[in-house]
Image (tube, rainbow, N blue to C red; front, side):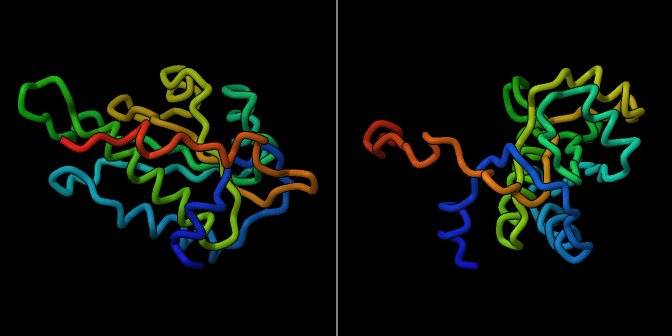
Length: 170
């Protein structure tokens, strides 16, 4: 699919039909995440694939926002393997994990899989419930699946501010 079309058509799916995504689709999505750039190429991300009913039930206890997705990717990063930027105020973990997550989300759209970026959960409680190592922090969950009948973008999906309101030339 044309990249411009992927970014135009992709939306946050909030109603899945529950049918699984294929192994080939999942592999393609995960491969795109692996290719995402990270500061100093530290690749501090760790992606957890959740598909079993037992583990999906754990996700459901952490957030009401799974929307019936048959696959959830938990995007985390190693807090002990980040780059600290000059000035010491920022580290690369969150931004690198966000870049990885964006690659995953756009790759999903490219292979015909709907998705929704979920951050409506307590990351510390989620890490504990999912048994993640103490050195890892969860950035987000990414629902993956196929939209149910009637699943569609929110009414304001295509509403965008003019570039003149969001871009300034210095």
